[in-house]
Length: 343
Image 1 (cartoon, rainbow, N blue to C red):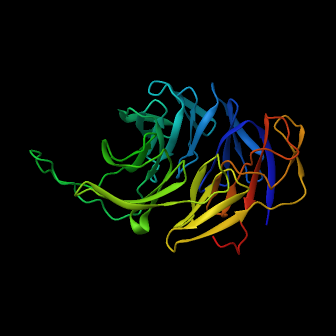
Image 2: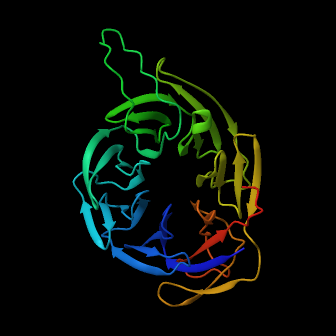
């Protein structure tokens, strides 16, 4: 097992690239691009703190969303920004699998879809305002073709083509919907605030996990306009945090964290689960961004994570180091999963 330790002040967000061995860290009013060992190789400044980062899946274009609603695009040391659409902190920012659309939702309830014009530049393609702030989204990838919706009374049937964009979105009041190109369709509502949306293509199922640790498995029928499914309560030893993050680590294997010193993995295909505990051991010394020494322990509570599929690695920043350093210094740990791990 290999472990690399680096430290930045006030980490706000982090994102691996799925192809290139590089990841981005958002801290204070800047974004740092780092290599596999956690060493910064490039950086750019932002007006306010970054809260969302999204790598284009087919290029080194990085999208960044900040607290003030400004969208930044960084590409080959060129920085482009737009403040004409959003003016509230972002809740999610994700590229579609083809890398041609960027879906963005903010705290004011504004949803926007951006089209890639040229590398490093975006054009707004779709906007819609909702009464409730957005929580999260996920794309419908690899599932069966969408069936043609049944026309409503008095509506004329038109030739149906598969949409270029199919994205599930969730708002804070529990509403779930599907965006297909420039159309939003309401699906259903769940009890509690959605925290994570994930799509399981093998079963054509939308997985929705709420802050209160309820996991819903939903199937949507566009022909009938109906959503069916079931839900289960997830386990956690944390009484107050609830769900903090979740991501796929393999087909059907879902990793979740809830301010514990472990990562829980749920096998949705076989109804099993695993626990990955952070390796306990002697504290290690590392340098912070301002070249000061700090001590990081590996048995603290995990508060966010990101998964890199090529090396099967999880980026797991703990809540604080031990002994506890100043609040402005947070250690980031990259824990590489061993080859004999269940996932």
